[in-house]
Length: 153
Image (cartoon, rainbow, N blue to C red; front, side, top):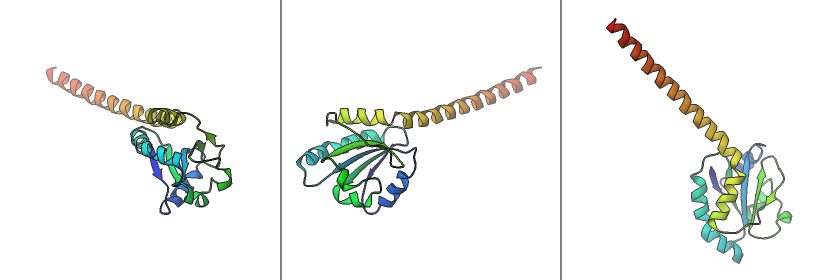
């Protein structure tokens, strides 16, 4: 899965990804002056590292308060408080707020659950590739066996 810390250099890339209606996104909106955000930012790198290792084409984004006006899918008036963690689909889908515990395991579990479909698509592709390679290997082995059999006859 992809992890993105939004900044002026990658905001256009993020806005383009938001146009894809199949794109699943988890956002953390935070403010540098907020005490709760400072606490969450202490564990967030651990969450990012665990999510980075998972399969899938989902997107985990960290948006600082000052970047909100640059983001197409957010309006500063809709932020209920900081930090705000929510999931959504690209194309301006409905935002579903996270209200669970703010520890690494709970956050990772939530993100993986929300990104489940993304992960399974990638997993299916990987399984198909493995099966294709296995079939090719078996086919080559069968050809070698038949060739050796002909030599013996």
